[in-house]
Length: 164
Image (cartoon, helix red, strand yellow):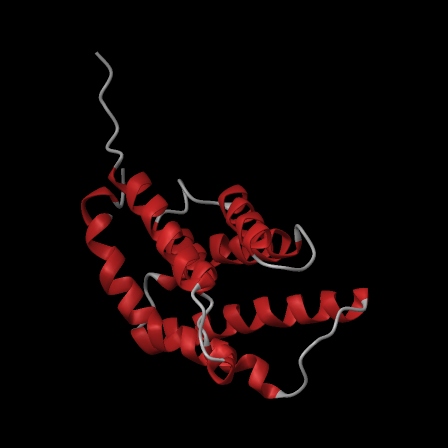
């Protein structure tokens, strides 16, 4: 009789994506839109670092397409950029486990900033309006600030399944 696989990480992943999608689409005041964390990208980063054998480029691409469907703009843009970031996460996931917390925060900041830079670059090349100034990257700072909370909330769901 084959051993049954524990589906806890799948349900945790599905629930976390739904919650991140809810937080992303939650209306906030116009003054605070620049500071809204990149919730779905943080979920892609978390699951890519913690379960790279179950969550990869295709999963990140699907989540990006989901973001494209609920938002406005070019369909496939977020999917492409999240797939690129997921590949970088796959390349970094072993090293990230040995980093202290401040280095993990720096890597998260760089990856979120890279995500935003690629989006901004593609939008400007295609002729879409792009925001001016560094306020655009305030979202990277807020994403780093909520990263420890996200890790704390999602870690119990994979502690026993990390190497399964």
